[in-house]
Amino acid sequence: MTVVGPFGLSVRDQALEADVQAGMTAVEEGLIEATKSEVPFIARAAQHLVRAGGKRFRPLLVMLAAQFGDPHAPGVVPSAVVVELTHLATLYHDDVMDEAEVRRGVDSANARWGNSVAVLTGDFLFARASHILADLGPEAVRVQAEAFERLVTGQILETAGPQDGRDPVDHYLDVLGGKTGSLVAVACRFGAMMSGADETVVDVLTQYGERLGVAFQLADDVLDIASDSHESGKTPGTDLREGIATLPVLRLRERADRLRLAEDLALCELLDSDLTDDARHAEALRLLRAHPALEQARRDTVRYAEEARAALAPLRECEAKAALVQLCDAVVHRAG
Image 1 (cartoon, rainbow, N blue to C red):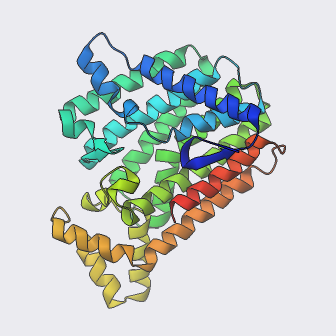
Image 2: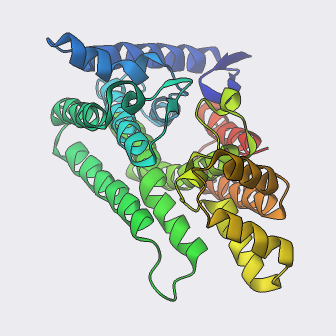
């Protein structure tokens, strides 16, 4: 049994292990190649997060999904590079919006070079992803374009907030479907599609990716509250500080509206205050870490991971399917 990829994924089949390892190595080389520039500063900024590492969750899904067709098909690795470049570009932009100072255990690009450079570097990565995508055919371009539209729509909806009368939790889960689920779904879709898998298999893996992506983000929401920067690779409570209500906060407010308990209402009031103040921010984190709302968010994470697992049922039994099931367990484990 060999450990590969994020979360210590265990692969027991030697052929699968070889394919996944070779594919991930090729993706890493592709990312470095795609972020080169004749302008040294651009290359340095574009490779900043590439070289910082990361879980490479999306490329791994491409490699596993490709096992349901020809994993050595020529479009598999480039499509994985496209998905990861797109993801990296969104991180540059997200860190500007969140004013984050740490990403993947290193200074964020905006903290090091300023917001303008970070935004433009993200745009540069989008351009390089599009250049690779053009060689993968019009269907791949369409799939990526639709996913990117959903991703941006999710980000806008998060910023705008729920419409009057809309349940905030339902709104937030829709946001995550766009912001995170869409690109994870594309990773699975590209892997299956580029490998020549049957259309029914492509659809199954796309649905799996959508649900797993939401579970993955919900786990991140829990980690943002529950972990320290050493565990998560970024500043804990970033969303709190920026006034972004992730699922633990939404579950807290839901409970406060329903039960009207004094301690819940007091915590909501604290969260609505100026959390750029370090003392208030630390107190809010401390109280949320001990609150039942955090456990409810963990249960929500488990529910989406179980839906992802259930989506795989129509697929034939094989080591690649077992690995995809294991990823559902790993996402839940991240959330504690």
